[in-house]
Each structure stands twice: as C-alpha cells, then as structure tokens.
Image (tube, rainbow, N blue to C red; front, side):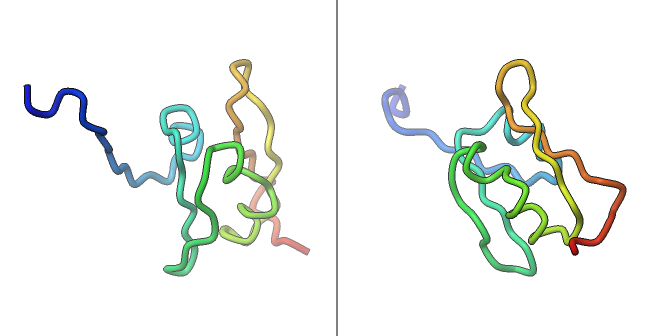
Length: 79
C-alpha cells in the first residue's frame, strides 16, 4: 500500500530491440561502454544510431502498431 501512487521504474537489459521498443517508454543505446542515445523508442531506434552502435547497415521499418523495428542488412559493414 505504501508504494501505491509512487513512480515505479523497471530496468531491463536486452539485445532484442523490437521487444524493448514495444514494451519500454524510454531506451538507452550503449556501444563500447558508452551511452549513444537515450530517449523514446522513436528517438533511439534510428538507422544512423544503430549503424554506429553495431557497425552494420540497418533499416528501420514500422510495425502495424507504429513500433520502430530494426532490420539488419546481412551484417554488411557500414560504408
């Protein structure tokens, strides 16, 4: 009862960007131990950021519900 009405937070660590984008209000993108982006799924799941983090070409498409989904392109290095 004491916790009712208080802000509640849950931290999840996942490599599943689709799951994170669907279930989280805010995402943090890390690469090499550094924070690259922090924000909503729409702000973080963006091709330039993901390409920088993973070093491969990425296309971002939208699911039917509008959730951004990262689609890697066969592990091709970013030109």
